[in-house]
Image (cartoon, rainbow, N blue to C red; front, side):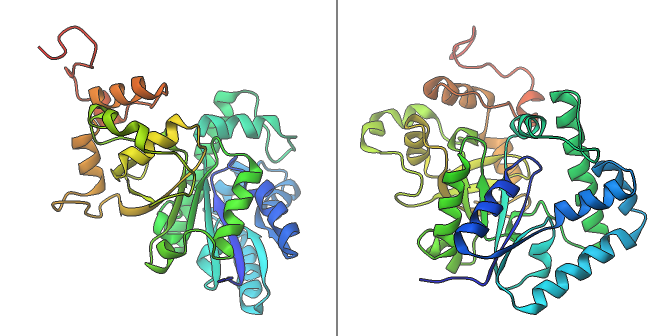
Length: 321
């Protein structure tokens, strides 16, 4: 069994970092430090919202400077702990670095449902979604300018968890299994991040018709079998290898499926094509529509598909003509 020293959590607002990190700290008997709580306290003291403090921090380095030094000191202390912080992965070396994501509207619903304070309150789902995105982009830009690191780059992390349909307990079990070396050890040893993705949010790049004959031979499981091979455009996850396993997971109602990241954004996938270019070439509107229809799910059409113009969807007049 391989156990790392600390666990550091980063991720989308509303992805469940606080809930998961609190329970994992209790379960493992580790101290928990939340930088988010510290920032909210700083915002209240300045009579600002969390977004206003983020925008202010872009101009005033003292805001980040205090928190950064605190994290450096904790990392240097050698204490094993749980950190809930959007930049702890940059300061901690000997730690399991967990990045949590969720579908933006679901994240907004979660944030609206929890008790709000003067530093963080929203009047509608639309406002919550827009403000969460703005706050996240403010942080991302600040980190790029100030530290030269991009929090959106998945290779900064060891484990990426999509919590859109998973319960907190399911996420906790998976994170602890990875921390203690029972899940994903081979992927991590190869220097790749382990992805635990919501299968209903992963895009196909292969015609669903080629899979129908073997559906009954596959059985969905969240971590069973060989991990999927996944590409990431910076916004969308798509299958490079493992369509049958993905299909089985969707049909089986599995909330998370294990995968390895093979290419991200400009990194080459096959034939020298980048992840972005391969997805744009392969994930055509008709192919996505057929996948949705076969599995009873809905996938938002990517921008390249919406701008394609003139593409005929399967089942529409003119298809197959």
